[in-house]
Image 1 (cartoon, helix red, strand yellow):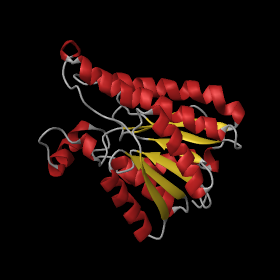
Image 2 (image 1 turned 45 degrees about the vertical axis):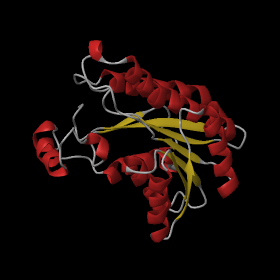
Image 3 (image 1 turned 180 degrees about the horizontal axis):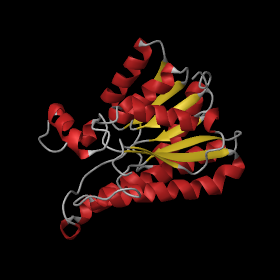
Length: 252
């Protein structure tokens, strides 16, 4: 695809894992990428990889739970590259493992604040710019855990990602008439740090996947990124409010 030349793309949680893979994929297709997240060093690493491959990117630190900082993040993206065409809201957290009755209030609040309120706040400020500047595209990163699949002992995360899937559909209906097309991608276990269990090595994870999902392997981070690029492209011009699952068949 060559649909992203001249486009500005904002990716939150871009310092590692899926966020980094998404940022690299957009840059490889000609976009100017704003890599956002909380940790400057990891964001700088993403930018170095993009620039080493001949792409254009800038790192901007921001916490998705801070509304004022997200408003400034959108403004900085526009100031650096002249606009904001596509936003990928990828930042998220996983904590509070255990039965529902044993989850701490602190863990519950932290997961919902980042994974749900953070996505809503990011969209709030992204949409505010897009609706005044001819529209745009938003892709939220949800999960196959939530609306599509449940497993024990991850209630805060599962609840938050089910909410992201529902929030995405609601936002899509609210804003498509303003030229803003909003969708979600719901990855399953992928080649990213979040899919490693405590104490598990990458080799252990490969063996676990052979029996845990129908495809017999993880989705590569680049395969998830490809789904994001599709939904962001003109090829998906009639795709509004969908939740595209990329999980090796786990929730089929």
